[in-house]
Amino acid sequence: MDLNEYMRFVESVTSSASNNLDEFVSRTTIINDAVNAPLLLTAAIGLGSESGEFQEIVKKLFFQGKPLTSETMFHMKRELGDILWYWVNACRALGYEPRAVLQENIDKLTARYGTNFSTERSEVRAEGDL
Image 1 (cartoon, rainbow, N blue to C red):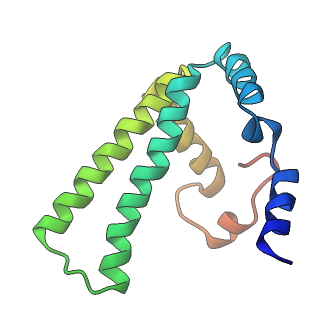
Image 2: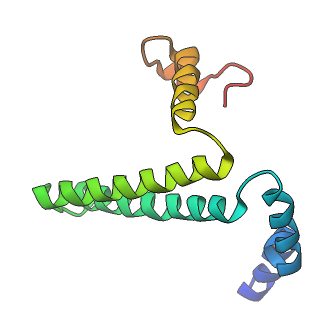
């Protein structure tokens, strides 16, 4: 298979909203009726980007010999702050209070693990445990 053939295949298995601006705008309008779509997009893209920046530092520490210095620690701290900023914007976009999201996470993990982590429970989850 050549790359042009693969490109045609990729286009055929990509959503209409990804391939067509009018479809994208239509989806955005529908979604924006329920949540703040521009803020949600900002948050989702920003979370991915900032998480990637944090991962890049960790990758360099473990695999490329970057020294763990106070400067490196500060850089990770700054990236975590950026992640939090986008996370709070995601909460805002969806209309959730950050504390409620944290409590939901505590409730989910308590239901899954009780008071102690279990590899088995992390691998084999109850129905409905996302």
